[in-house]
Image (cartoon, rainbow, N blue to C red; front, side):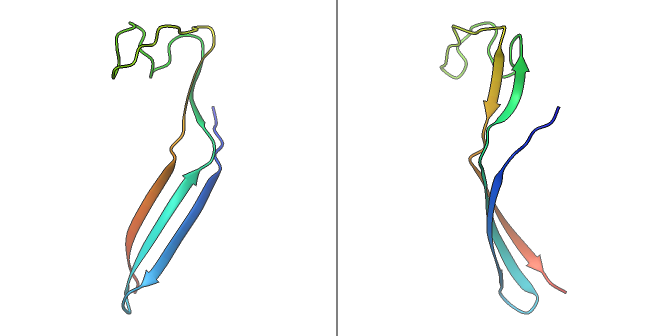
Length: 83
C-alpha cells in the first residue's frame, strides 16, 4: 500500500554569529491521506455506537468505509551550529 502527498515547503535560515544560526520553516500539505479503505469498521470509528467525544456515528455503511485525514501544516524551528 502506498500513498502520495504534495507539500509546499517554505523556510528561512539566518546566521546570528560566526558559528550560530537558526532555521524557521513551514510545510503545507495539499492532499488528504487515506488511513483506511475497505469494508468493516475503520480504526477511528465507534462500532458500539457509543458517544465518542460528543459525536454519534448512527449511519455507517460497512460496505464502503473510507477514513481520510489531512494535516493542515507543520512548523519547525532549529538551532544550527556551523563548524
